[in-house]
Image 1 (cartoon, chains in turn blue, orange):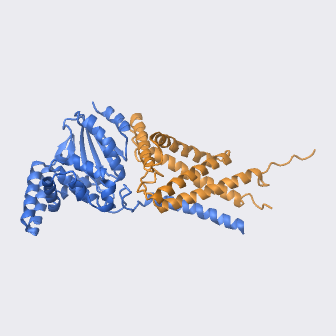
Image 2 (cartoon, helix red, strand yellow; image 1 turned 120 degrees about the horizontal axis):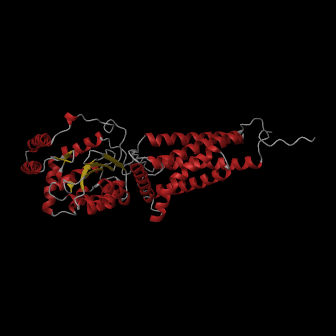
Image 3 (tube, helix red, strand yellow; image 1 turned 90 degrees about the horizontal axis):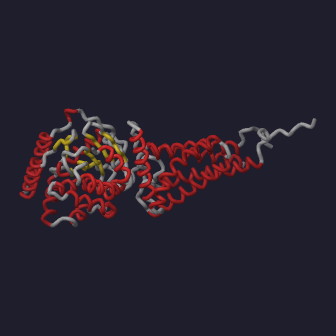
Length: 280
Length: 175
């Protein structure tokens, strides 16, 4: 009797272990605020974007303008109209560019010299803990030692994951702040206070804390107008085309056309070995 | 009286060796070769492995238990150790020793995972190369693996002390 019981227990334990192991790997987590894996949904499956569908700088501006128009008409409010106009003006001045063979770059979310020998794209989610760690440690040192020395051109791509409740909102505020020239300070504030706003959802308050009331007003107008949403969406589409399976993901491009994807958190010392090899 | 070579004790030992050995090898492999694996050159391969150790180190750090030196040690030592222990379990040589070590390691895992879960830490468990949020499910899985390891170890010791008659050395016949 006892032997049978032990045998049954052992088999059950082995089965539970194997089943849970498989499940844990095949199904991505759904608990908010933790996972940085792209879920297995149709939205996040490997998407291959045909060349024709990748919007060029000019057409993206047109798309944004077209999208801005109905918003203005719907609201009918003078405030929204002003916001849309200022967004259009901002976009016209900051149309997406191509650097080192990398297209669809929003210049307000890129740093460094366009003549740098290495271009680094970082796909990240403001609510992902590993992205926070990467931004507050590695990226800051890369900016100090490579971007500011014109060795690396750094592009921040938004890749808000659907499992994170506020990451899309955070991406919108960050994008709007970037378009008034406050990208770095707002991104830093969002990452540094990640644990706070992911509990309360107070993204707006976090952003407002590092901006003047006048700056915050402009940012809020851009966010409310939703005129910059196509830029966030474009970043996401580009990420899906890579494909980005988890955040953070870096794609490091060299002038000779080589690309090096680096997935997950990487310490500065380790990343430095690759950058030193690629920077010429 | 033992009736067959594959009695309960041996079955549990075999089950534990195969399941835990396989899981340990996979866990170690996935930490070393995932999520980054660039095979263009020796340099990129070395970078990929170091990047993966760095990524795993960040997951270890998120448990808020070890100092930086400890994080570095675990991140670089644990993945190869998991592969080695998994292979040793599968081979079965000096099983009692390796089963005991695996059980102790799993005891460590279940302790830190349960602690993190009870503290409500929103972190990845760091069990395998792919990010996997730490949930009650993770605690249950680690608990199941730990119990299997305990049973395997106990039975491995029993088997050594009291070998099955079919596998016990045949007494020499008096001439």
